[in-house]
Length: 583
Ligand code: ATP
Ligand code: MG
Image 1: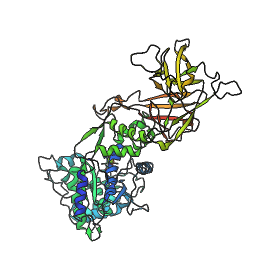
Image 2 (image 1 turned 135 degrees about the vertical axis):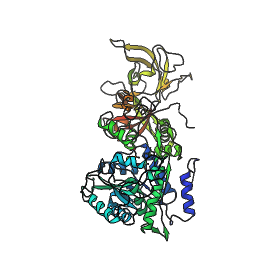
Image 3 (image 1 turned 90 degrees about the horizontal axis):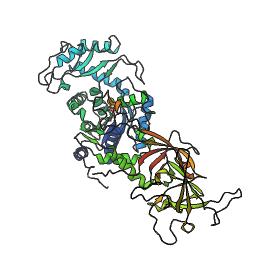
Image 4 (image 1 turned 180 degrees about the vertical axis):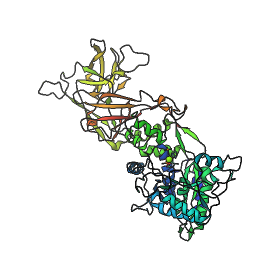
């Protein structure tokens, strides 16, 4: 297997050691645990690459587990899209599954068992019900430097605690009135270890279970239980959970005491948690909450707006799964917080599309070029209605890939060229079309500009040219040098297309620098510009999602939502070049 130097990271070494020591019972099992409360973004893609990637590397399984233990804001729409996005990235979940679909788990399917585990903790004197108000609760818990104080309920009998816990479940109390806490250590320097909350009351309907429950487990309690009961061996998450790890281990110990750990091939599976730095990207925001606000307030067209850092947004923009995975690989896995430049991701996209995307010609800012001496008997195919004839140009679909073949493009007397490829008063080193000068029309012929036609406002309406009749194919018969080559689209057969030019969504590399409530002021007002272009005939039939290189311009894809045969709409995926080079 080919290995990049970033691929032998500490998580991989950790798993390797466990496999070697026989601690996995012969199978590495990981999980990706999104909460179905939004669409997943590039940060999740990173976690997906790690979770699924490690399972793949060790020939194991990765479970997709919807962490739906927090009833508010979760939905099936989100859940379905998460699945779709993971599949698109090229990963497959596997394992037993808990509701008919292999490898797929809902944390909420374990609520009964979690509740029973909590009851058992109470019976064993390891958990108690507490009715301190939120402020009091914080006050009792104290600060890391000083031991906290025990809750007045800390030594309530198991019988009484069970009674209250059942009453909590049965709806006798309001939100926050009581909670269930682990009885651990009120003096621990780790504040998360000071009798943390395991269950709380929330009178909120769950998107799958309705009003069955009004008590819900906390993440710190639910997560190790899910991992343990699913037989997960390696549970990888982001660094903010590092301080929660002692609690994770505490819960796993209790499950072990209760005889609940999975035994695989004679090996008792103790799930373990390790943490890596989250992926941060400059020039955008990633938290689902902040992305949701962009959607709800209409700053973007939806979760899949091509400017969004969501997986569906990147897909619609034309980013490829391969490029996203390559990016995650290059960023690497570490314990150091850092920021990544979106230019690296764009570089990965460009690298892939350069190899794979068919070349096409499209003129984004068209100006008409008329070949005055066209069709005067040079062998052009004349037509009965007096048109002066059409020739065909044959161009490779991809000069880097001969097997991609060629395409034929009509060429006739009037063609579109890009306004920027002509300068009436040329600056130095401008090698394209100028008055009296010559330029090569890609694959066709050499033309010379003889006059410039302007409209009433003085704007250029058309460029009149003559063509060198011997230059068909592109080279001058006398061998003279013509430096510039420009792309073009034939007016008679070119297809009008809407082209959406995307730029960064924010104007600042750190839109959150003034706090997470003030990021909207850094929205880039020019992040989307729409133009009407002319594109070569084949592009008129582009299938939604299909990617192309528009020669000399950039990489584009037919919009998956709005593009139709004959009425194409293209998104600019990335420009052709920028100065970026990966280090
Ligand atoms: P957000 O705050 O963006 O809403 P989250 O952490 O709440 O994200 P979850 O659905 O709870 O999202 O996360 C699922 C998994 O994805 C978790 O294991 C989480 O650590 C991981 N994850 C989320 N964001 C990132 C990121 N930026 N980089 C790496 N992993 C991430
Ligand atoms: Mg979350």
